[in-house]
Image (tube, rainbow, N blue to C red; front, side, top):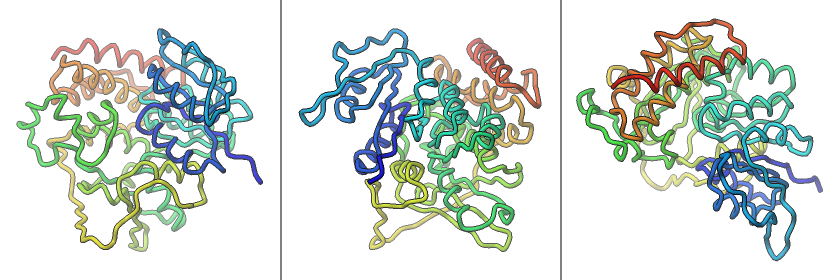
Length: 389
């Protein structure tokens, strides 16, 4: 019997990470959580270590206290677990030959070094950290080709595209169509968006996500990031990417081929399905994800997006068109602006304005190095933090 696939779960205490562990739990004979990484949720990480008994665990926050006990206990047995503090330890740990697959689910640009390390080591990368490709997509995908790393997206939209592309040749693709739920403010006018509070923005109608991603969905900046991610994942030109609003979150994306055929991937909104697909591709065993119920009537809507009320979409297409440093600047400025909104330092409608202003005033470079991308990331964060509301 083959040994289980050894998986490092980066961001194990977040929504993607816990869903990933659901999948590993359901397939314990073939999947094993060999490493777990969390930012500062020490108690929850300890619970996960106790159940899954990884080889190592990391608390990223430098001021986070490591647990007094370094033992993983499960089913009456116990084993020593190597505990580490600080995200700087993660790249070396995941490059270990014993790790087969790396789930990159840390939120924001903080996940970039780990994504790079996993690709550099030629691992299978189950990528949920879209910011890695938004910031450094050209460098990461080029390195993946060189090392043989398999980058399989976990975002429901990009997983859907990945699955649909199995139906035909890449050269026969006319375009991909990313679906967007429209978030909690679908149908709102620009005037209505002026009164949005953090509490309102965090109430997504169909998905259960962390606060940063929920706000990105509300502004539709998440779709701007996904437009950029799609460019690098699938080697697309700007005119090969479209967006439609789909409130039911059942059609996760579509691929249109040159002969007029449109292939879609549909399923109930449950992140465990794309996670399992990325971990077990090309296999499709039964799993913990919700299943369709075809005995109930359903209505599926596909609507054009409102670029006027949600200008973040326009910024996404502009960043794809220009390339270079634009993705890094857009992502960094957005992360800071979202944090300021959640801290009630900035109104909701200003988030996209901050991003656009910083994007328009940065020193553009068409072919930046990784070092230059990290530098301009820092510059954009400082600019967004100084921006007056």
